[in-house]
Length: 397
Image: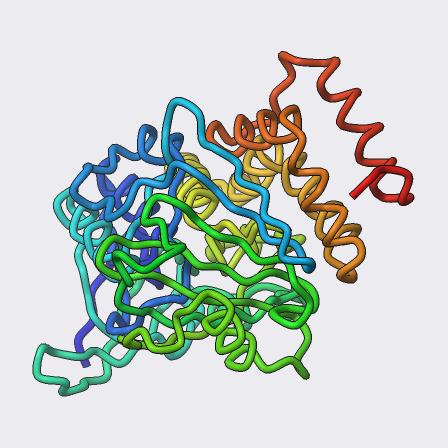
């Protein structure tokens, strides 16, 4: 059995794990990035300008530039929201994630392909990580590596979290499913620069359906926390509604997605979570890539401080700082999902409310820049009263 010693082992090479590995390796720590690879997470693939700027994402990774979002109500009413003076980038997760892992390696992280099995606490300090190492020919070998600290970046239903973090299995999940299709360029109604979001109960009883362009392909998907709802049926209905039934299906993917940060990210000693494992996917929108990478940065900073000071209590900094930056946005989005996604009557009013220019401007300012915008206090007041009017059925639809 091969054994190696590191300062940090990152288990999971998605955007959050790869970001944490890159930043820690850049700081001079010995980092192992362990990822099983070969699996693409179902994801719309949207990245806002803030992410592109903060993480220096090259233009060649962006397969589509979205200039408009279309919201579709239960009545089929359509509200188009233009993205003024900018765009939302779309990436293919298989290419994007691999690029992030390669960048981590270029900064000094050691990459290993393998499947995590278990943690074993070392009485002398740190953790032994046991995993099944896989070579390029598919052959597997038992392996283990030692680390002073372990970062669990292995997604929702994290095995690292299950083994090391109390009550990590109590998070609320939405199950997402999408199909990657050949883009129907030239088809009537299809716009390669527009994302369509469908708020209709027969497509999802508590979330939404989507059609997101990706250049040569597109993602058609839906999500729900209702285990009795068939996601495949929802996607089939959405494909029929959008004239995509005959489009060639390239692959199908599904996975659980958390919609609430875990109350605790670390074990107080030598294990900490990041990304989906920590529950940092935005409620209401389901947006995850930006928050995963921002979380990876905060976790890397906390781990760096912990290793320097040999003080495990500093691991708590990651969750505290992340929620200080994004907790209010998560709270607002959580309220939105609770109020507006309950039934088609409320979904209809939600889409109608989004036809308001004040709502559109503040929503996209918050999305593009990842903060609640305070520079227009009267607009916030107007939106508050409009929101109440729609909620209590006092506004016209």
